[in-house]
Length: 541
Ligand code: G1P
Ligand code: ZN
Image (cartoon, rainbow, N blue to C red):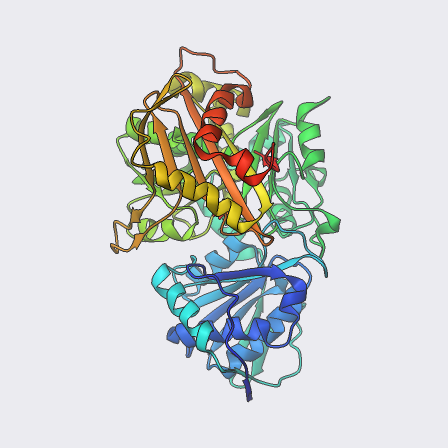
């Protein structure tokens, strides 16, 4: 064991429990070590406790795990549970932390960002509830990272991660565990696997695209081995360090083959994909794509059909920019609905306090109280379970939902890689108008209220300010502007547009057309195009 001198580290973003950067940064001596030591120094329970380690299999995953294990041993961790081959999806890591009472876990992933030597790498730390640690802990980690002057590491030879078994380094026990079993067992306990199996047996066809990322082995065990789907139901099911050169972002741009299968020719009944680390999902039916905001609302409305939620749900939460489709369902069910800042960590306290059962974000994440992360395969199984017991197709469920609740037309426009000062200028421009906007009319829409979203956690009272600008109109339309916290190049400005059509209106209009007037109003107020010098967003979802 040795103590290695280092210099303070100013790359950690305050308010986050993770670090996502180019692989080349992580390869710099001491870089990963500084971040990991800042966590060991800020979370004393790790010493003498159990630590979970695993990642999405991207390039540098195995190297990072060896470093973390050597540092864990030197920092007094008693036991480390490591997914075989270094694999653990984000929700599976959350499941393992909770199941084995671990003090926390390191999850190695940069979500959907490209992998490989010239791609990105990431690391995040989750606490003992299995979720991203709360801000009081991230603040400590950040403060520590600014003053750190040494890290501790043992000089053991590399551990064989590929074979199940146990090892010992510096008095720390290491168990290489099956990456899939605990998670698959959890899913089997939540859902009616018999009903889904029968549906598959009677010819219902699915297509799941793992995009050469972590969900391949999980999908194989769950869909093929346990539910009896033919193995041809899976696409790109072998995890690769560079994701086969792809970009495991669940959506039409990167899951092109899946989308084309679901929109042309002899379509399967059900399509789905997940992202790099398995926490996000997209569900499709024949020639339909379910928007994540609608998916959250539909899962909320139909949760009672699913074994684990048959008694009803206690409440639902969505991130602020997510469409308000779920709010309508909560109102009808008579359960609480929370609007939280962007980021999964804000759901943790509500889930722990049993104030909510389900939660989700517009960025294709949904989850429940079964773990403390969003969970891609969970959401897909929720859908399959609902389809199996209702006997309705994805298309019918989606359209039936709009007919009952009306439709929240919704879209996110991302301006990526813009200069930080310009992105901030857009935000400032709106900030300066917050007091004067209410009452003003733009293209026939009168502003009802405008604010900078601040959130007071109902459980611990902590306050998070500046979580995005909201401008809401009397018609119920609104737009939201915020700066991304996850981009790795320059700044990303996100514009979220939403309007509402009641069941009696046109429920099948083109989304962008329906939102175009609101988009112009947002531009008039925020001056996005001219400040950024961009006529179009980089990505529309
Ligand atoms: C993005 C998503 C957000 C999600 C986060 C982490 O954050 O918008 O919903 O929680 O990634 O996966 P952003 O880049 O918008 O800060
Ligand atoms: Zn992810």
